Length: 202
Image (cartoon, rainbow, N blue to C red):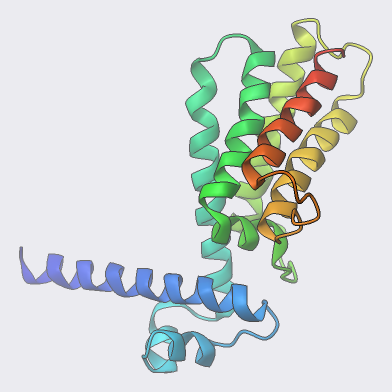
């Protein structure tokens, strides 16, 4: 490996270390109470080193936000080979739930850590819109195939997203403890199955 390649590799490794540390700090402190100094302390480096890679905490947060949604979209697209749009829609909800189970930190940052949106044109915001559009377009496919004919596309998409996100948010924030006789897995998967049973009647 040449000098240029090695330096590039070291730079990428450092950026990833910053992102990993920042993810932990954002989740512990929230967006408002996180600072570049907090992040630097987490990874035992100077704040100056962090600024060398990122201009501010907003850029770091947006990078993590974009990274999480890119991973979610990648998992959504695994279902593209499923021909029946309704079967794809049902499976997509489970992919969403499994993503939250397997990537709890990402899910919290993507949906549950509040950050003031300064620019709706930033890449993180746009990729989030792309993920929602993916669900919206799939609902349209279902309608074109004869399902949900009398339902408003926007309202139905919002309902599906809200129910699925609600299941994931309750899990990520440990709000499932009220259901003492059921495990998280049972609540999430069987709860979603109950929702699907309602959709099948539509």
